[in-house]
View 1 (cartoon, helix red, strand yellow):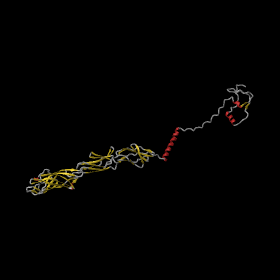
View 2 (view 1 turned 90 degrees about the vertical axis):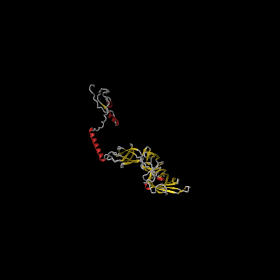
View 3 (view 1 turned 135 degrees about the vertical axis):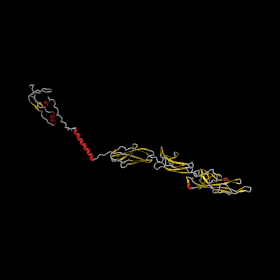
View 4 (view 1 turned 135 degrees about the horizontal axis):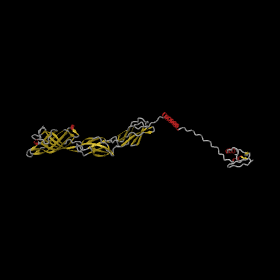
Length: 440
């Protein structure tokens, strides 16, 4: 056999087919191929013996292993649309979604803060806030109250005012209001600053006597009781009292002394403005210093000197009062027409007797036969009640009487008892050193 010509061989049988047959349980004699023996050259070739049957399985040996069939192709991926197409479709979908929201659920606006805020302190312990409802934006569900930047309270959205209580006089505070609605909260409103009031005491009254003044007042209904009160007379403090005290007595004053009392409430370093002023004077003495008077004799003993009955004499009397809390006495330098029709002075102390003042002394007034007698002098002063102001007499009248006793001169002579009587009235030109008998 020539080795130049290629050998003719059957087509290779896939291994997979043999295995499938084996798995199927097929059996039988090995298939043989007959024919003249041929030589197959090449790597791994097995020389066949001429005239012998070669099993099919052996015939496979000279060939390279047959590869398994290729795997099935992967599933075909869908073809991606161009990007411009995706953008177009997405835009259409977005527009459709927005349109759906507009149709089925309208867009909810955000809340708007109040455009202004007013704050006032009606009492020393409270601040009242008020604001206009926002014009637009989400309907307010609530308003949030902020004080000094921190949330203080939250109130229903249908209310536009609120009162902050529990404060102290003189507190300096800063308020803002925010709107809450539609699940959102607005920014704060404009700031409102306020200081709580420090209310003044009320109802100050002063009851004065000749030497004292009693003050009474009430704490303001607009504030808490203060820590203390300070009493002033004009710009000068005269007393500091506990905050629970609402009266005070000033003693040791002088009659007819002017005053201007006020009371200030204090809470720590915070002071109220002064209360309403109660001004006036302590009670006046009825008469003080020189007072013009007209003295008219109404009765003189026969043959005696001491003026002329019915003839008025101008003079001046000097009054020096001495007052206690509820009463005054007065030392009076009395001048009446005396001997030789000259002024005769007496000093007498008069004291209250009802509405009048009276006083009496024993004084050397008359002279008889060269003997000066000790006589009883009595003075009565009567005010005109319609002309009394704060105790001071505007007009007054009175009487002066002098009674000389009977005197036995031991020489066969005697001095009979005698009396001199005078009427007195305030007014006239006055003349402390006038000569008695000078007509008015």
